[in-house]
Length: 160
Image (cartoon, rainbow, N blue to C red; front, side, top):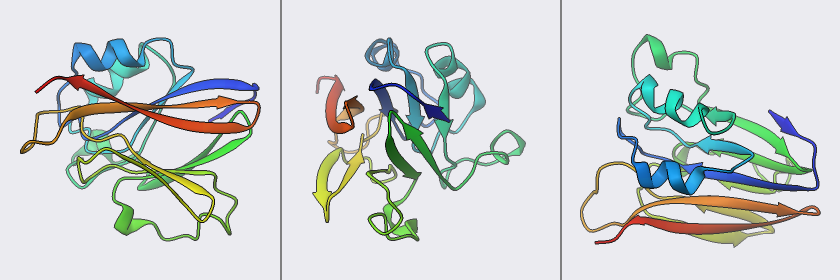
């Protein structure tokens, strides 16, 4: 997917584990595109997200069956001049993002929302938008791209 605009809002979601929360759909409404960083667990999740915006998704360790076979393990998309690399588990990142010209790496798997910058690359894990795990928040995120600059924002979907 490639979006050629100077401004874009890209929804980030991961680890839905077969659950489409209305709060997640509300948060992602109005996005230009949506990235799902894996552990989708059922095709109806992607179908619901596609009603909001074009979806780029990768396969997580819990995505099994015929419906998931077409999902890549990793992918890179260009959005408003920003290169976004998506892989479910950060341990499976098999490239040097900076050397490859990647601006943002989006991951999931840990269920722990985080935003950090390392060597000029923004790393974002939107956390889990699926069933609550332990005491971790139920969350999603967004990338806001304006004139070639990108920032990430995390959002708690369900209060404790």
